[in-house]
Each structure stands twice: as structure tokens, then as C-alpha cells.
Image 1 (cartoon, rainbow, N blue to C red):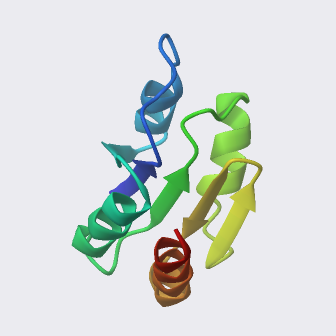
Image 2: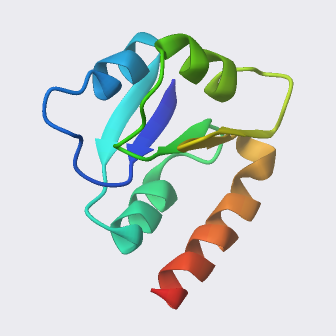
Length: 102
């Protein structure tokens, strides 16, 4: 199974978490960038992981196309990105740099 980490509290009434679950993602919510890094580190290395802005506005089909295509080790749509196992180290480094900058 894949894991999606929302990078903040979802907007009230949003179907985003349910949409991600319908695509096969376990959904976790991070309080801040440091929490997102910790949640990312806890996801087993072989799993696909996605970081998703909780303010994402778009159709579930956009999420499907952007986050579940197996042809690419990493992919993004506005407000969401995903990394498979081979791209996870780069995602971890980018998140660490972001956390350090904040």
C-alpha cells in the first residue's frame, strides 16, 4: 500500500483524504514540515509516498494521474508530489533542506 502525508490540517468539508484513500493510500496528517519529515521516515522504504497540500483543489482523477502512475519514480501535480522507492532519498533530502530552512 502507498502512504499519503497531508502537510497540514485538511480544509473542513474537504474530500481529499477520502479521495486519496480511494486511490489506495494510507493517509497521515503532519502538523508541520518537521512532523512531515518524521512521518516520511517512518514509512517503509519500499512504499510509494506522496506529500499533499491539504488545500489541494482538483478532481480525484488528477490525483490518480499525478500520484499513481508506476512509470515514473517521482511525479508531481500542483499541490501534490509522489516518490517511489528509488526516488525517496531525494525526497527525504529536499524535505530535510526545507525543514532546516524553516
